[in-house]
Length: 203
Image 1 (tube, rainbow, N blue to C red):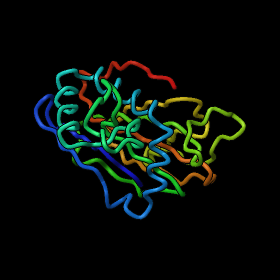
Image 2 (tube, helix red, strand yellow; image 1 turned 180 degrees about the vertical axis):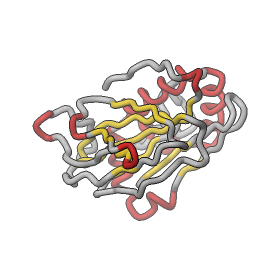
Image 3 (cartoon, rainbow, N blue to C red; image 1 turned 45 degrees about the horizontal axis):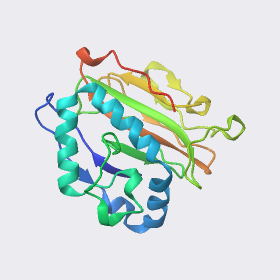
Image 4 (cartoon, helix red, strand yellow; image 1 turned 120 degrees about the vertical axis):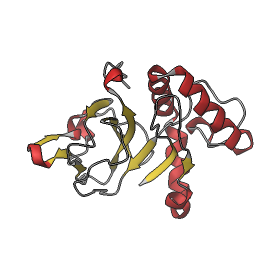
């Protein structure tokens, strides 16, 4: 699992944390850079979504990203300018790639607020492009709520799937995709009851 630019806010507009998970990409640098070079539009959409939630928080995070030199997806081929010319939306506030049959066990998000919001989309692993060909959809990769006997089949995804659920109350997990030529990309964000009305974003 890859992650960079992770951000969680325990209190609105108050506290946030940043990290780049360098250890997770240390042994697969070429694959990471290849993905980043082809997914700049995704970073833009996620940045727009974050800004929609709260512009003040967005500005604070963007300032920190620039000062720390955190790469946005459209900057992976220009390492000399990682803190310059960063577009208004071109960074991943919290972006995680799940690939190569990633799965996890049923769990609760103990460090989250009541609700969590996640975005999913399918992409080709090589050349790391958003998957728009319906004949090449991944199989498997369900988001499952075992105690509720309910799941969301991500193989039917034709764009961006957005899900909001009580992640600290309902056990949830992801089962592995059966097609290793693709992967699912997830963005998670803590949201409160007041932020339940969200704009849809379609790739």
